[in-house]
Structures are given as structure tokens and as C-alpha cells.
Amino acid sequence: MKRLSILIITLLCLSGIYAQSIKLGYVNTDRILLDSNEAAEISRLFNLDRQNWTNQVREMDTNIQQMERDFEIRRLSISEASKRELQAKIDAKKQEAGRLLEEYFGEGGRAELRYRELIDPLTKKIHDIITKIAVDENYTMILDVSMGVVLYATPSIDITDQILQELNKDTIKPAPDPNLDTPAFPDPKDPFGGGSKDGFNDGFNDGFGFDNKAPEFKP
View 1 (spheres, rainbow, N blue to C red):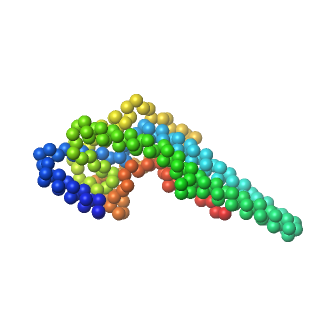
View 2 (view 1 turned 180 degrees about the horizontal axis):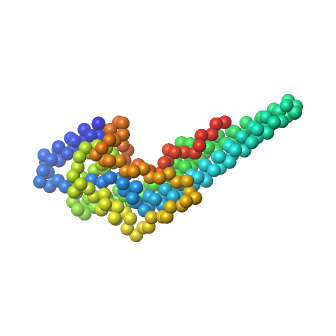
View 3 (view 1 turned 135 degrees about the vertical axis):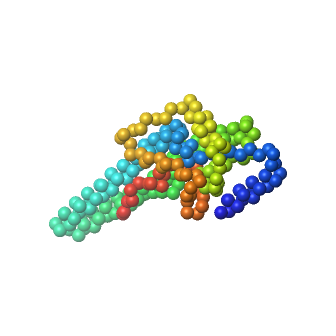
């Protein structure tokens, strides 16, 4: 609501001062990312890395489960010293797996850094394209309807397709990889329909399922 209030105040001020010269436009950055060729390639590259990291964690988890099964089979026939030794190896393996999970998928981990490495140049490119169009075509303001603060706008001022045309120029969307477990992009939200529970979104949603991390590992 705070963002909406600021936006309303800004527009009222503009309408009072520049009533004859205001030129407004809007974009839907959710749809830009959904239909961007470069975003599709980023999603493919990111999920290649994520699948590789996930497979490593799963393999280690499988090894731990096998070690635990072997221990249960042997525990009645081995000495207490051997039991302690085997249990210590299992515990060490679990700690190693926990460190690996944190390294890949924890806060500030390799997945997060890789995601930022891939997505940041694209978001800057989108911003630069929007800015250039705004300057070249004398827009007073261009809003992002995916952020949930615009309640209504006529489609005639939607410049999303114009942004996409410039963004996808000289690029090719990668073919889907049937061997890659890649989460699908979500459908772009209705910008004038229901939003998030707090009334707005953060904009530039990545659509890569970044919060859909590796399977939980239980040490």
C-alpha cells in the first residue's frame, strides 16, 4: 500500500503540473522474462548446474543410506569398538553431505551466486532498453504492472511487446532439453487481477524456480 500511495501522489503531482505533456506507458516484466530468448537460455544454463549439484547431493545421500543399512546388518556380529568406528564414519559422511548442501544451496551458496551471475546482465539489459525507449519517445513515466501497484491501464499504452522485440533481436530461443529436469516458467500473472497477499510483488520475478532447491537432506 505504501508503494501505491507514493505512486498515486506522484501521478497527481504530475497531472497538476504537466497535464498537457504527460506520456505514460507500462511494461509487464513477468511476461518479458517469460518470452525472452535470453531468459530461456539462462534458465537452461542455470538448471544444468543445479541438476549437477543436486545429483551430487543425492548420490552422497544414497551412499549414507547404504552405509546405514550395512551397519544394521553387521551390528550384531561386530565388536563395540567396530560399531563406534562405523558409526563415526557415517556421522562424518553426514557432516560432509551437510557442508556440500550448504555450499551449493545455502544462503550465498554457489547456486545463488550462479543465478545472480546469469540474471543480472539480463535485468540490466531490460532496464537499459526501457530507459532508451522512454528517452527516445519522450515518456514521462513507464510503470511495471507486474509489481501489482497499477490497478488499471489501457492496453494502448502497453509497450511490453516493443521491449520484447528489441530484447529478442538477434537472439534465438534454445530448444528444450528432454534430459534436463527444468522447471517450467510460470504463466505471467494478470497484472490487473489478484496479486500477492501483501498487495505487490518485487518485479523481475526470475521464473527459474530458484527457491525450488535441492531435495532436503536429513543428517
